[in-house]
Length: 463
Ligand SMILES: [Zn+2]
Image 1 (cartoon, rainbow, N blue to C red):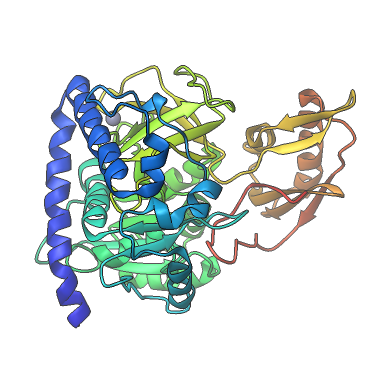
Image 2: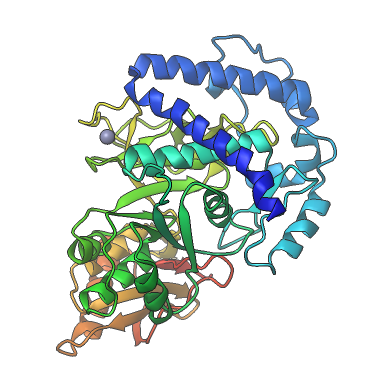
């Protein structure tokens, strides 16, 4: 238990950080923007002073108090990894050594080892391409956990309680490589009692441990929460969480309805990444997702990197993590499709609202067009027609050389669901201008999850 005792001071610091952050809820939007600007300038100056990579990129840019973030260069994952050793602010941090540390951690489920005794190294759960590697120092982590505690406390009502700690269950990838697992590990030290279940296990194996634990709060990938809702509605799962939160995957209207029917509460939607920690979350009014703009600066841009106006979906997001001083991520690209809301939330919190966060894990498909050439098909084009099919419990649409294959978990119905899926998707593709891509429906018992992250994609490109 030495490791736990050593971590308790970190946990207490995170609780204090959460208190400080919660006070921002009462600020005016102007006050919050001024605070964000102050943190941005401090971060950029820190990066210029301690990161050779950033020093070179920022040369010639005046780092004044009124610095405009859009004047700074954007950063993609490949560049970040290529220059990792010069980008970080501690010269002892080397990508090859951290990769070896991660490979070793991967095989020890509940590990929370600190690299060089002070850094938490994690990998992004990216489903395609090279994994991202991210490092948080002790103080960076304190702030990130503070942000997480504000989410569960201030936004969801699960404030830490003593001496009988709250019971929170989290069903995500329980691999220490992933931030979700490391955050749960930190909260387990003195804040909440955590039951951590691995999302990659079959749902039937999750029911027993959840019934025994009786969680007051449940956090899960959206698809897992929806499957657990089915278990609850079928009477096998018998839990009564006051709050349900979903992260990391697309939450469809159908999933939300199943969760509401099972537990009588609207799920909180959290938008997070290893790059940023908690990035945005819904509040108790569920009018959109509040950007936690005191911790991150988020820009929604088009494919060319130009800002898009509120109400218009961007092609990617640029995030600047305002708390990580170890690995300064300034205007780091995330491939999410995000729409900023022109509205403000009726709760009165000053954080700007996002209307939608889409394509969080789904792929955009490039298909042959009916008139020649190609057409890009947004995942929503394919998901929307399937949203109102009551017998369709879960699905995955895979695009490969043979066309579109829909793996479908179908409930007991009239036997027409497979044909209906095919008909609806074919019609949706025709409407979008795609032609000559056959749609095949295969009925399966369960949808296979990504072996590393445990996440499920709804729309996946394999071409
Ligand atoms: Zn709100």
